[in-house]
Length: 551
Ligand code: ACM
Ligand code: ZN
Image (cartoon, rainbow, N blue to C red; front, side, top):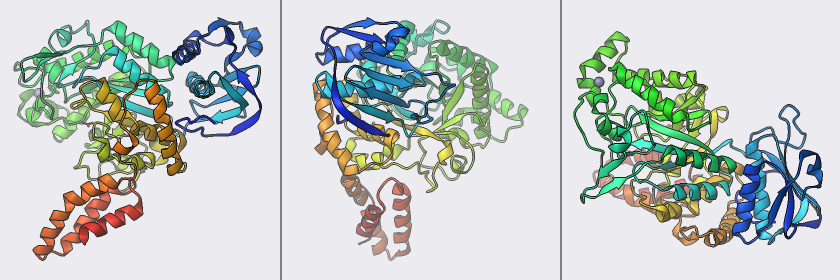
């Protein structure tokens, strides 16, 4: 069987015989968008064919058939989840069937890997397959560094080949606004460009035509794009273009340094919300999917504390403090999206006030300080996308984020509890780009680690050793496709490198505590280390590490 990542999560019934892709003309039934993806992928590996489309009534005689089944009549073979498919292979025909478009592209991808492995042929049988998680995503931050259309498409293709199905596209931040806006032209004239410390100008934005092209390219590959316009913080580029939207109204530049910047949108001025709504409406026209990410992370409240309009808003709305003002602001945005038929996603800080609209989905990345405010994910009904920093922030070097931890991930929260299974939509790996300058770096940080995310989100937990072997073989496919990657020796497969790093971080403190006669401090450190790693590192390894730190 083909060395596919992720491995099939269902039944593989093998039969005698082989299907050989006809030379020359291939009779095909299916939607042009999908067939074109298969055609392009096969052409790239030297399997160029003439694809002739046949009518619906001839579909059973086509050599390649993509058959969408009615949702109202679920077939017995199918798992009841979006993205499931059945692939039937006989000597005469390969047929992909599904109840949804994403399932067809997943089946298409499996078929592609089989034909690639077999040089245009594959063994017969029936393969049923379905994802464990509905949401299998990556985040690309196009603000801190701007990636051109080809780079974005390249990542979409590589992710789609591993059956990832969401691209969360971070399009606005302090360092640049990246979406064309006709309603707010200064967002592009001013907000899309920054002056670098060396005096050069850096930036760019995606035109509407480019975004439509990318959305359609991704859609044909089973990948939905979720845009993020981060508010009320991380808005340096918006405020450089329209300082009127800040509390102080002072002129400022698009930021050229990473970090958390103090200036945020004024929540006391009605104009701010009106503008945000218009901006969201304009962006929504480009993205047909039900989700919209509105950020809500890392919004310092110092400006709101000083701003008469914000303070008046707090008073008039009967709010307790600036945290509740953020909740009020986000609630308005969430309601606006809801009116347009969209579901808002926001970062976990938005739960801090306890007032977040119940319909909003939370993306959990954790802030160090999170005490108990995320318990709603474990004990309530709040839906969650899981991107816990120590496991899923891919801007960190591979030696800091062990593959084993990603592959064996559990949705642990900072306090040791876990996101309830009913609330967990899935998982997302984040490529924050402060230190990702170009396509090569993006690819290297992605691979091979992203294999672990794809495998775990699709398949749950098969044997880790077998998975690592499959990865090693799968690296060949990356090389053939011209995708840059770290080698298997350059990633932390077992967590050993991370263990060493943690010991190095904590041991000096333990030694000092011991020298100062503060024995009880050892237990505190043990607890801290455990909290940091529980559920994401094997228990025996945690014990071993704590012992080593204490010894
Ligand atoms: C984040 O990393 N600020 C979501
Ligand atoms: Zn204000």
